[in-house]
Image 1 (cartoon, rainbow, N blue to C red):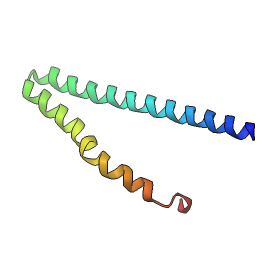
Image 2: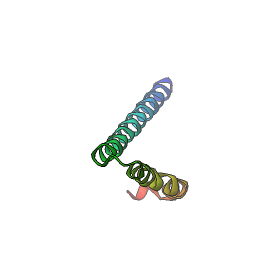
Image 3: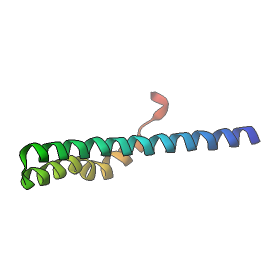
Image 4: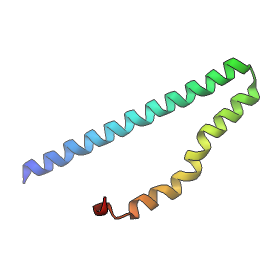
Length: 77
């Protein structure tokens, strides 16, 4: 019994750590693209548009996609 609890905790920590690293690296890439576009064009407008377009999908889709994925039958996959 104790072994399964420890395994569960270890798997949870591994999952959360991997999610943290994935999120951080995705944001780094997004910022790199934004700054690249800004540096190439020298335009504050491009900076604004790139930032909005980079973050808009996450802001709009997250409240809907999360609950949708939670409702899917995971045993079917």
